[in-house]
Length: 130
Image (cartoon, rainbow, N blue to C red; front, side):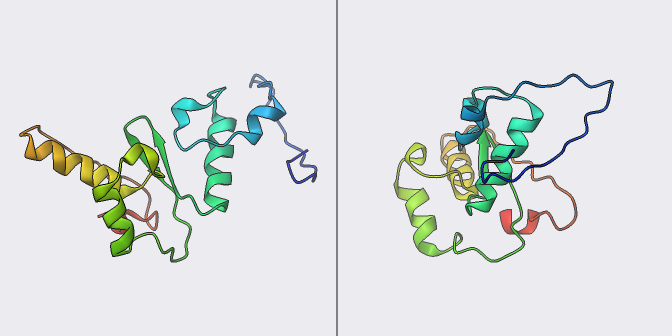
């Protein structure tokens, strides 16, 4: 049964172990997957899916940023949003590619080597991140 009350039947291959699920854990969405109560594939996918439904297309895994392409334009790349990530504490803001870029730039100014890997399938939104 999903959070909205609808029922879904899921077939689990016989060679796969069942993963116990706490309903309370499904209700807790996090902007950093490291903070998940239980870390497993179903919880990760659930968290990413529900955050994307709420318009939160970015999620951290520690220092790594996961981006979900919403296949629609979102007002998250404006000059005012960029200014927030330049001038405010990133930990107080939602995950964003601007936070990653700002952290990398500030580290470069301190002469720290940086690398950014942008990976994904065709149509995944890589161009938006660059």
